[in-house]
Length: 85
Figure 1: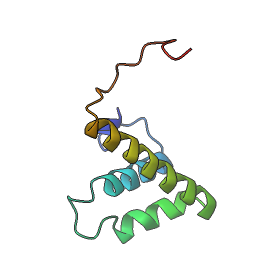
Figure 2: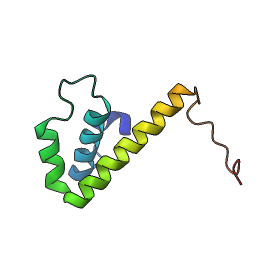
Figure 3: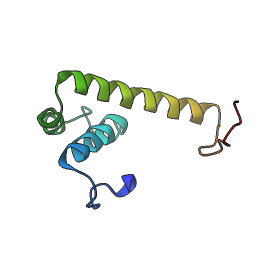
């Protein structure tokens, strides 16, 4: 459902704001200037400053892991339950 978040009806307005911020913060090459003021203001309507810091930090961390996986050619979804323990 995340891939079709704009069309899906299962997300709250707050979740939609977080997904929009995530999409714009991830696809920075697609938009000159990165996250729009509108997307940031929409997220700020639903999340306080501390929550926005946490959200932005998680977006950046997930993006970093995704880029690392691309660089080392680690395929997504190959985790097997119990492989590390």
